[in-house]
Figure 1 (tube, rainbow, N blue to C red):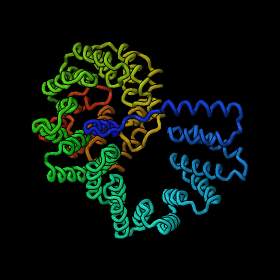
Figure 2 (figure 1 turned 60 degrees about the vertical axis):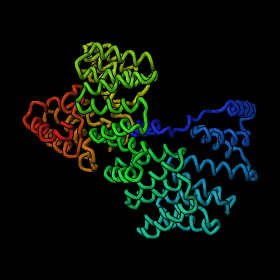
Figure 3 (figure 1 turned 180 degrees about the vertical axis):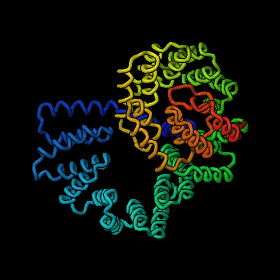
Figure 4 (figure 1 turned 90 degrees about the horizontal axis):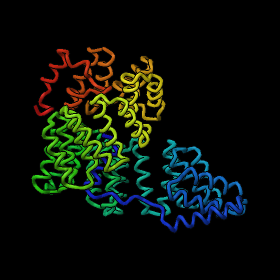
Length: 528
């Protein structure tokens, strides 16, 4: 499960998401006035600055940057207030875009105009830290703290610098002092958690994120996102911290839900089911998504009848059930009931035509029925919603290549997977599979070797994908080695191991003695 999807599901379940930010009618009206004024006078630097500031507030950084550049081009040297603000704003934009050298130059230009600006000193200190200029950052944070002894930003900044200087005691002192300034603010604990993560104190960071979750609903999505991200790096620490929280507050359903969702995301489906059941059985919380989550877990464990019962319950519990129909379609596909699967997938698309998940379910059912051209068209529709989704690109490429005799289209789709900007350490980018299909076996091998060598595969996912890759290549011994490592690390997706038939699977490995032996040996992780 993708990080953004886990965080969204968790936040939805705990009712913690703020409404999506929209541009108010007043702001729209003001922007129209700005546009007209600039159209009449393109060198109106004051209006350019005002419009750029509004673009920045709307997170439209490219347009904001363009307006700030133009404002600085036209503003005379004696227009100090505008030039100061534009340099500050441009520094902030560059900082947001991780262009720290440009940000550093701009903030220095702003400080040349107003040397004692506390906001600029703070901003420069943060930029210096990102540039690795730790002694300069320390000097600016210290200067800010002298100006304002209760400045929390300065204290957290000095804590982060102390970590980089390997002065852990000082880092802890500054971080604790910063929290003590505003102990009722969730943000205080989120920020201390980031410092504790930097110093390798994952357990302490988890405790802080949990405190943040119980302190302020408005900060829940940030705390959840950080907690989920930390679980990718240190799954045991996060689960231990959540277990401690549950022992201290055994009737707080949110803690069980978070622990279950993170366990599910890390393929520990048996533990996730236990927590989801606890929430329902003890009536700690109730909404249709809980049964949907149970359905996903039972589906992954290959317990399709139980998964189907939970999917049906989720569908009956709400009218907003398009994702549950899509999930039911996948389950019916696994049961071999392909026409019913297609019917449910079409129902999901009817309810939510823009749902990529529904379109994927429909394409899978069409593929199972041998309707390959229809499946390709459906996947093309899905790509309109998520044009860089590697899973959809690979599935459509596979159909074009193996079922529809469209090798050129398949090649272009594989190339899109390779060309998409993605984290080279993210196995879910599927880059190695696409490289191999493009005849670049050496690059594909190197990509997987790097993933297996340089990453802590804490839940077995990387080794699972490697097993799929080597099985497809015919390197069955290598595939079996990766399978053993994946299972040993807890990758408990029985469906993927035993039943998945798509373009990325271990199907070529399934008839081997080692595969059968490992499935028997590791049966307990599948609750079998």
